[in-house]
Length: 150
Image: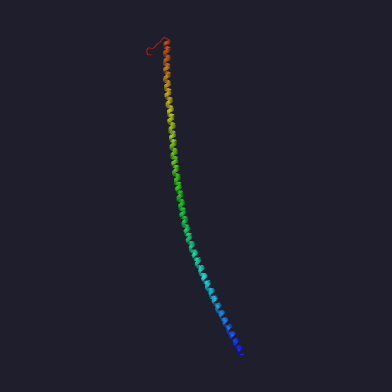
């Protein structure tokens, strides 16, 4: 029986040793799990903080880019407006000059027509008065009243 009791004592010692090893292993697993949870929590917190920082940085960059783009668009629109105003002014000046030249040309043409009509009227008047004098003179000769002037 001593051998049986020795065997049982060895088994008991083995079981106790196994139980103790399992408890130590469970404790190590528990500690490792807690450590991993803490590491993951720290990692997540760092990622969250980095995301917040980068989000703020990106938002600030976007605001700056949007402001710059708005300024560029405003400058382009102002430039286009100034160009349109300059071109419009040049067009109106050209149109005004054309109309002035046209009006002056028409006035000169009308004046030349008036002068030509006046010259033609004067020539016709001179011609008709010459014909009238000739008729008077011929009538005077016919009537026997010849004038010494002719």
